Length: 447
Image (cartoon, rainbow, N blue to C red; front, side, top):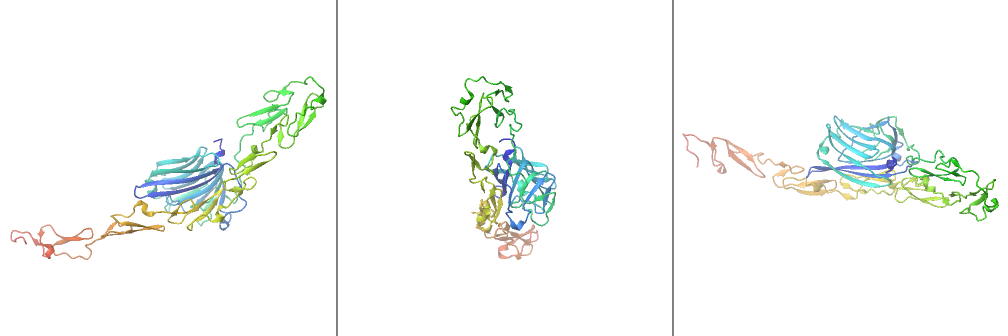
């Protein structure tokens, strides 16, 4: 990881799952990162007009009417070199947030001032990271998506955010401040790196070569020193100046020229080469022309970009491929095109990257009291044992309903049965519907 270059452009998709049987919760996030940038020249969602992508300047924000639910799929894409809060949602003293920091993405959950833990994701270059974190089920039992919840997107954030599942800008009830809608205005380059040759440290007496952590000066014959600052004077001629180019020291079709004083020669290099003798093939890839994680291959006075599976095409991998054109989301899932990728918002009962998985709602064993679970599309059905009812067979049927017991007795409900029991002070044979007789010294016990 070098500087802040690693988090220039991401796709983030999260989904929360509650397992009823073990009472645990799982937060799953998918992070796709690329080190370069692209400016979208064509809007990818015509129905959203110009409100599917927004630029935030740290003071701007968007407030959404519909809060994020930890039980549903949530996703967004963003581009930044500076970071900040992607979103913060809070209600009373509880909140969840997602922040871009210099050391990674941080998801944070606080319930009433009690932090339940952080999930931090760190990447370098163009990578895909799938991270799973397990929290106590208390996080999913909390009412974080109630009517009083406040969801703020982009406050204290500098960069661009592209909407995704559950974070949709073009909906009713949205309020915003100082937001620039439309294609991202960030420059079409990677996050800036230091050019050690920017100030010409070689004093124009040599060629400067910028290394990752320093620079080097390739000095001419007359000069030496770290910055070619030492003038060694005119060299004594050991042979006629006209003979300096006799052996053609200039490589790669360079042209040899003798200086006016006849003390040295200079090489006039063809395009694509440099150095005293044109021995250096200029690396056209040093300027990082390939965007969005494309691989640069240096040639002779040229380069080529291998875009691979970045989700982009073009000479510099600058053209975003709309992955939603081929409708990759199955089972009526909704496709959201992102920076170099896509994400599917699946309909109820389906999951997976392309909504290809039928979720088995019976896996959490929701049916109680011996009920049998029948998995269905997006839901489940419980076949209850005799004596129970309810969606999860959680209700014991009152078998005493409509039952009239003999005088001085009460009905006691059981499981798919009932009994008439004499009240205190009475006894009798209720099976024969005998009335309960009061026990007294003046009456004999009924037998």
